[in-house]
Length: 224
Length: 204
Image (tube, rainbow over all chains, first blue to last red; front, side, top):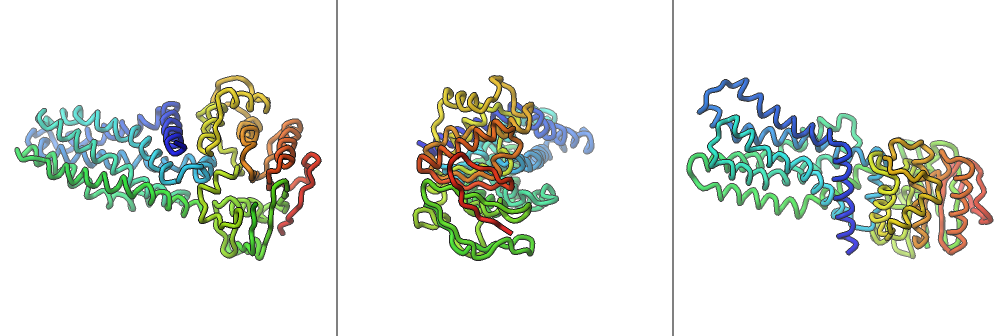
């Protein structure tokens, strides 16, 4: 009961904070839209080429956008001392970390899933692929939040932490990128994307099970 | 209740303390005194388990606190150097969140009363627009809701407070000790806490 109370408390707290400071949410989303919109301008408006690069570009933009919002995940709490109170909470730290990551995904990941079809429109991606694209992002973006949060916890309070975070986390994002963009490529080639999506699902299950405890340990180490 | 034995800590190549031992029973008050940079905050962080000492250990009812983790956290109230309030939230939201996380049940009514007792204005404004002293009060209002928590660890509870609020805070600490709770606080002023007699640890 106490654990559920703590999860609900952290979730509402972080969502309320995001609501009171909407610019943070808007920044990550706008970044995603702008990066994904720059490619057609640079590559040229050849429809076949655009269709071919669309899944990769959308996925890379999602990675970078999730990266951008991660740096603040624990840094703000660390600065005002509320992180200490989270560390000394009555619920296990792993549970608190899971709730924080969930809130981060709801604020920074889910909007990407919703807006991806609009971006896909720019690339003239066939409407039949929207489902696969959205599903792959729906399964993949929580993994990005979970893995990224480990990096954010490890680099907490370090000078130049933002760059270090990118160096640490982006290589770990590679499997998500490959399976995520791969699933849309498969679907566009007329094959079943089920295999790739299942692998993404497996990544999600594994990271949801282990990442919260890794985040908790990383937080304890970096606050020492 | 709380025991620490042979604590040793080095920070930035300087030894802050070594073979420091202390024991605290219910109804006892301990003041940690010392100059700036003498390790008062560090000692408090070790006592609540946020830092681990290089040597020695802290025990709660005989069990090392690193084995207890959340079980120990439930028994203590730690108020650190920073007020630990979120600028974007109101004082009432901050207080009720802090209590829920600490496993203390606080109704909306009791949260309101605690804030009133600390003289915070009845306005639903974000803490950002409050003064430093009012922020501190918003954090300290947790003391009023934490009567059931046996161990209080307070880092500089009187900073930024006016005379009246400081007196009120020290009364709350005295009441807590009188009901059989234990409290450790740091300060560099020699402030007396009600009728309770504080033992003093002086750090060099």
